[in-house]
Image (cartoon, rainbow, N blue to C red; front, top):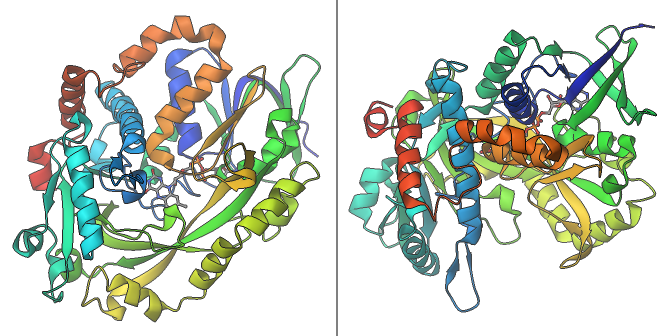
Amino acid sequence: MSNRETKTDVILIGAGIMSATLGTLLKELAPEWKITVFEKLENAGEESSNEWNNAGTGHAALCELNYTSEKSDGSIDISKAIKINEQFQLSMQFWSYLVNNKLIHKPQDFIMPLPHMSMVLGEENVTFLKKRFEAMSNNPLFQGMEFSDDPAKLKEWIPLIMEDRPANEPIAATKIDSGTDVNFGALTRILFDHLKSKNVDINYKHSVDNMKRTSDGSWELKVRNDSGNIEHHTAKFVFVGGGGGSLHLLQKSGIPEGKHIGGFPVSGLFLVCNNPEVVEQHHAKVYGKAKVGAPPMSVPHLDTRFIDNKKSLLFGPFAGFSPKFLKTGSMLDLVTSVKPDNVVTMLAAGAKEMSLTKYLIQQVMLSKEKRIEELREFIPNAQLEDWDTVVAGQRVQVIKDTEAGGKGTLQFGTEVITASDGSIAALLGASPGASTAVHVMLDVINKCFPQHMKEWEPKIKEIIPSYGLSLMENVELLHEIHTSTAETLGLSEKDLVNS
Ligand SMILES: Cc1cc2nc3c(=O)[nH]c(=O)nc-3n(C[C@H](O)[C@H](O)[C@H](O)COP(=O)(O)OP(=O)(O)OC[C@H]3O[C@@H](n4cnc5c(N)ncnc54)[C@H](O)[C@@H]3O)c2cc1C
């Protein structure tokens, strides 16, 4: 039994991109605050934030077809795409600030320029894509988007996808060169190295087992250390950034805001190609359309990835079902997340989502050959031996009761749950994910530290010049920010040619 006990201002649970972002922001806003981190694994960025556990798309809604829907009158609703693009601009400004202030030395260690494309097959989908292009390309946020249904042009853009494709098949694509591939694992590790240099107390192989509120409103955490002994640590503010592990921790906190919420895990799998001859023929992230019945996070895409100075291709994700809430989690995670307060919500979701569960189980059963068949919709002559399977991270989708969807409605976004006194915040859900970490963590800061916001606002604006403004409505500022972030992060046209 260990007697180690500490008192601190802030405890961050989990060393993923969310805690890394919140910790870095807080260190800039309140450098004197003491911050402690507990991470149950050996290193930072080992779960969903790891480069092999997610797709590394800098989600700016430049290519994801599930962010734009067709309305009943046939017009295209781009409001979600606008929201996500605006949120991504906050991340770009924050990362640029870190580079400009030498907190990050080499941006190419975590971010690379890469065209983002949407590609569809079939006449109906081509019509949809054209309408979508017309709706988006007039918006300043999506400036530079091109459309083509000309096979010769498409061969220039995506030679690997066009090779050996039947000539009579209707096909179209949009392309925008200002997209990115982001290595969120590397970014997480860079930010934790920076936090360490700022004397943040980072404890790996320390698992938070339980927590309770103390009489003065602080939180006391029961932590199992690397020797298996129990420690107690107290903080005025706790951020539950446990990724898939957050729901269990939120339930342990006992706060009323965490009741009637459940989680539904969706696993992911990618095919990866390291054959340089194949890899060299593709240079983009190409997003297709989700199959009927597939959840939005399983939109298939073929991506160039830059990991450890090496280029590879990634195809997927193939969704699947596993009851684990973390890749390194337990088979009992789903069962133990069912509590008296959320059992009705969970049962309602179970009844509603039978077809999704069936779909996920079918996906899990797919053989590698069957997966290659799906890949051949993108690369007609894909060869089995060029592709390996990698297991990605778990995404725990939030289940809650909503007015629109009724009891047990599955949510596909992220949810920040905070106690009414702002002493604890938990992040649930996983989409659009790491790309919008800065937006989500600013939301946490706003909700949990309202008393400091006036004092902190000038610094936040120094870090994020567009803070509080809509870039779509401030076109001049948008151009300035696009130009300066691209230059600072090595994403300008010159870098694009060299990447
Ligand atoms: C297949 C897949 C593809 C994705 N693609 C993209 C993409 O292309 N672009 C994008 O922006 N996002 C993507 N995402 C989402 C993105 O990866 C996540 O939103 C993001 O990484 C979540 O970060 P996090 O810090 O919340 O969680 P994590 O990175 O999972 O970190 C949580 C940490 O908490 C630790 N932990 C958990 N419980 C405890 C405990 N009790 N005590 C101590 N430590 C604990 C875990 O070990 C882990 O290290 C994808 C996700 C998946 C699964």
